[in-house]
Length: 268
Image (cartoon, rainbow, N blue to C red; front, side, top):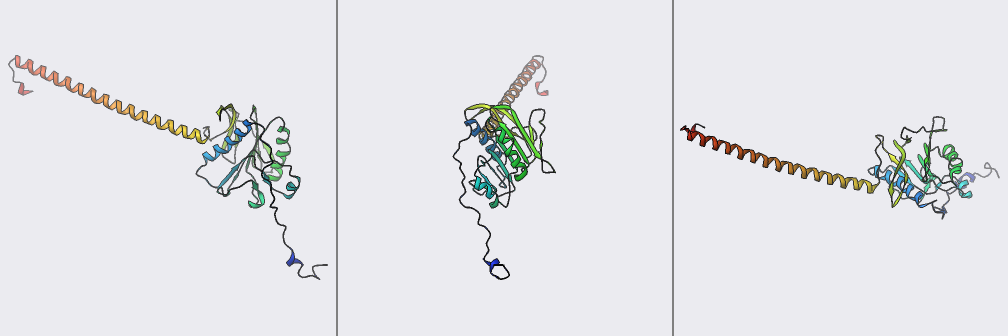
């Protein structure tokens, strides 16, 4: 029956309802404990750096739902780290559902590779992030290989161009205004070469516990400076008292000498 013969056809039509049976946990663990720590380092350090902002969402190892085809295939695991800017950061989310976020895709993605995932991370996923997500900045890094950092930026033609490392081997993340580079140290009892953020001046973006330790150390240093200044003031006061006593003694000796010579000491 045509719509001309059935005027209620348009009235009865309703848009398809978005699926509600979304899965937010694929049941698969991260590649290693180092991968888990590396993901949390990126999330927590960015949250610490932008603690006064609530206009972004940063997550990791979470599904990003973007199409019904993806729902049918269920073959796409979420990025290890991603950031979406200019959104309500106060909302609680189990995952990122594009059609519930006004069509917003991640602005920055980092995949923590392993030998078994490197080809996919630099192939299928890279193409997806470039051609479908239009993610501005994409990076890959293997936590077990300090020389593995690579990155791409989406150019004006909506194509990924490889980023050129700085003299330090860092890559510039234009969307965040931060560098991504390596840092060697111990985090959560594991010593490794971690992927970390650096600010435009080259300062390490600290984790919350690092920032707290730095603040505590700064307070100790300030207290030590205050004690040193107080000790210096006491020493100066003592030195001034000694000088005053020495001057008084000198005057007394001079007065005594003048008395011996028959002079009037009151003239002094």
